[in-house]
Length: 282
Image (cartoon, rainbow, N blue to C red; front, side, top):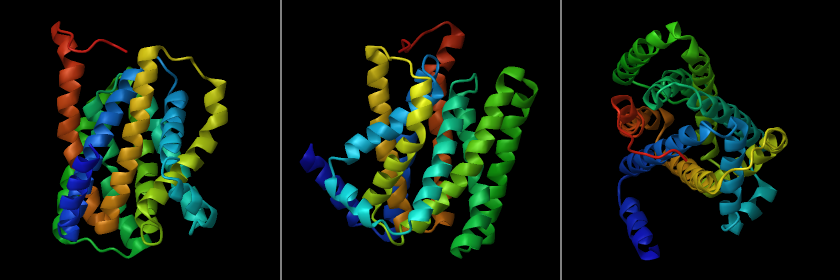
């Protein structure tokens, strides 16, 4: 397994910087969708605060294996930006977990979340000085129009309205969080960015999560472990993608998650609407 991972990292390292950014962004999209799927499954029986806390805490435990990253936290550059990133990321996570626990389809959750890309382009210009060409602006506006079209029917459904509002808040805070990651990659290794986020988000969530804690079953505990694993992998892949390319290039690549989410939504939940049951609940 170690040899296979070394071979994969070696292949990525031989690519151009843009190709490496694309590879890391695609890996991030896949792991984020796996993470979202597990969070939606567990959201039916566990509090959103508990799921969000376990994601950060599990990532922190796994990051502890790479003790070098934790040691570097003592001399952390740009501490205020790390704190801002952790705060925004935690709010985005909580809003996303809550929305996933409602009746919103997984694909619609992903569509709303990636309206953040429209926000990131002007914000990247203001905060990071990164320019976007007319073609990128046009593609992003078309994508945002699709988001509005997809969300409109849900605004008339009372059982989905709160989920839509939560995801809009998640999109706004996630845009700020992703730009903070891009800024941090200029001074901080990806492993340290992941370690700092895991530590800070765990501290922010430990008290409220303890207040609503529900003891998970064995199956739910396995799902929570998977959330920790996929959460750490997604954070690392995202940080790596922003290391090799500007936010205006990396962010639009995340739209690949929408067809991935639609496929997962249908195969895991949509089939039940047609009388079949492909996945037993956790």
